[in-house]
Image (cartoon, rainbow, N blue to C red):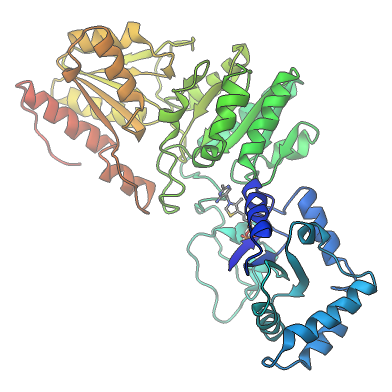
Amino acid sequence: MAVIGDGAFPSGIVYEAMNNAGGMKKPLLVILNDNEMSICPRVGGMANYLDRLRSNPFYTGLKTEITKILNNVPLFGDPAERFLAQLKEAVKAGVHGGMLFEELGFRYFGPIEGHNIRLLRKYLEMVKGLDDPVLLHVVTEKGHGYQPAADDPVFFHAPPQFHPASDDSKTAPTEKTALTEETAPATAGGKSYTQIASAALARQMAADERVTVLTAAMCQGNKLEAIRRDFPTRFFDTGICESHAVAFAAGQAKAGLRPVVDIYSTFLQRSFDQIFQEVSLQNLPLTFLLDRSGVVGPDGPTHHGVFDLAFMRIFPNMVVMAPGDAHDLEAMIAFRLSLAGPCSIRYPKSSAETAGGERTPLELGQAEVLRSGADGAIVCCGALLSNCLRAADRLREQGIEIEVINARFLKPLDEKTILPAVRDQPFVLTVEEGVLAGGFGSAVLEAAAAAGLDASKVSRLGIPDHYIEHAERKELLADLQLDAEGVFTRCSELLADAGRDIERVAR
Ligand SMILES: Cc1ncc(C[n+]2csc(CCOP(=O)(O)OP(=O)(O)O)c2C)c(N)n1
């Protein structure tokens, strides 16, 4: 038995499975839980089809009739037969829907009211006896049973901790700005990277008609509501169909548009082959905005976006960028329009920081040296830059001068800036919020080895070869030694190896 939501239902893999099951003719029960909601209201042709099924007289007009009949059918005995006889009548009366599923080899039942437990149990008893695949269409209300959730199902899809008021069920959490994983991005202390990205995109859409934005059901999480409202003809929500979103964007790029696929890093994995064949092989000017890159916090291992650096860099033609801060992110979104081929820009689920000081203008494949020093070098790929700068500050207090390089690009890698550091510095520490296997540090090691340099001088901080559990992002970064304290500690160890003793008082 499989239970699937109507939001997940349009995903291509569902039809692969139904095709398979319909051909096998085995007694598989699929319960479609139709609450008219994905995270946001569901969209697309399948949504319209389900709406039509719900407006079918079988559900509306005859619903009460059928319920009445069923209420008289005992739970045990041979109800399936009796039910099917009733159903035949319904079919004769032309009120039976679900032909799409029937044609695929499923028996379609419903829609029925999912909150009517007695009715639901009867249907379950009935379909149990059938030998064919069955699709049972159940209608429910998202948030049912807790009024604030029913009133605001988008917010309550993944709410923060709250106390359901014991005496007043209408009391919703007072703090709607708290972090929820799949809905609102982090906003503590200023703007999140997500907000900066969507504002930059909106400006670009206003200035350039070729710019389109695609999301796979994450309009709210990616803060795209204003774009959906202001640019309805250039905003596309494919539903939870990531592979298609990328292929669709590739088609748009081929036709002369400059699409942006705004997607969570972890969900892009569903589009791996489209990145290859539809995008990179065609060398199309498409941008991937990879939100929630790195560790995301309590959503845990399914949602940590830790693979993208490693898998994006393997594709020819791809430019792989990782902004060190908010300034870089805005510059990269503007810069993408100058590229003739595909690129990706990744940023974490966190409030944005700015490195400050005088900045080097963004140029293809060029890193930025933010701090000079000869006691060692940190090369950071991405938004952990502020942690690296804080670690360097602490070392400076002890008279240690560390060079800090903001890599900006993983591909093309700025060998002109990074390799001299490998050659001349006592050590180079690469820092990235992604898997160590095949990621940024690996790219530096490869380049150092290819240049005949002593690659053993390169140490790497990143995500080790195991899945990262649930915890607050801050806690996870500390565990992974990717916070300022961790970078400081690792530098201290490397300095100690090079004969420099550092006072290591944890802060
Ligand atoms: C591959 C993938 N894309 C997007 C998401 C984000 N996401 C989580 S739940 C959800 C909506 C699911 O809607 P539905 O299947 O109808 O279930 P409901 O929450 O309404 O019961 C989305 C878009 C995800 N978890 N995985």
